[in-house]
Structures are given as structure tokens and as C-alpha cells.
Length: 112
Image (cartoon, rainbow, N blue to C red; front, top):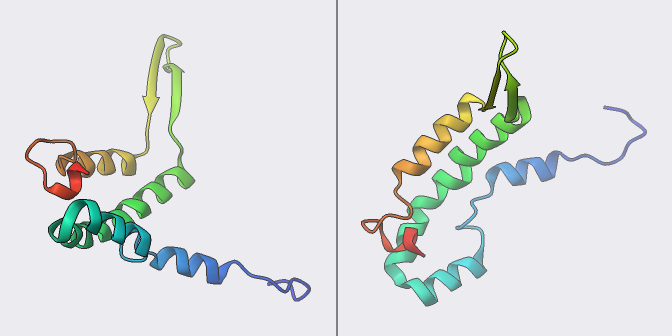
């Protein structure tokens, strides 16, 4: 680290990595309690770590290492117009869709 620079982003990065999007947001909790009830609040507390840590890390890793791009031509110069995505995005997509967030069978929290 350069001794002439007196600031660091480490405290911010550490706080960001420990942030639970639902548990650490008192306003959102009050909102869910008011309009969703106690059951929805409890379900949100269980669901939040997956979004805050697992899915957030997958997105962060995927976008920083290899952002999605549009491939117009293949190796033989044929027009393909294909979206090329990182593997982490495919994993994330499967996990998100497996939660059935917009399904009629989903829990109250997911329907909010």
C-alpha cells in the first residue's frame, strides 16, 4: 500500500460482504411486517441469506470475471447471434427459477 494514500476501501468492502439485504434493513422489515405479516417476515429472514450471500457472490464473480456478451459469428464466420454467459450465471438462473418466485404455489414472501 502506498504510504502517501491515507484512505482504504477495505472497511467498505468488508461491510458489503457481510451485509444481509433483509436482516440489515429495518425499513424493509417494517414494510414486510406491515403488509405481509409475521409469517412472511419469518420466511424472509430464512430466504435472505441465499440472496445476500450465495446469489450476490455468484453475480459478482460472473460479472467481474467474464461479463455476458453477444457473439455474432462462430469460428467459421457464420452468423449465429448467440448470447454467451458465464457458468455462474447459468447456476444462478437455475437456482432462482427453482425457487418458483412467481408461482401460484410460492410462499407469501415470494409473491410480494
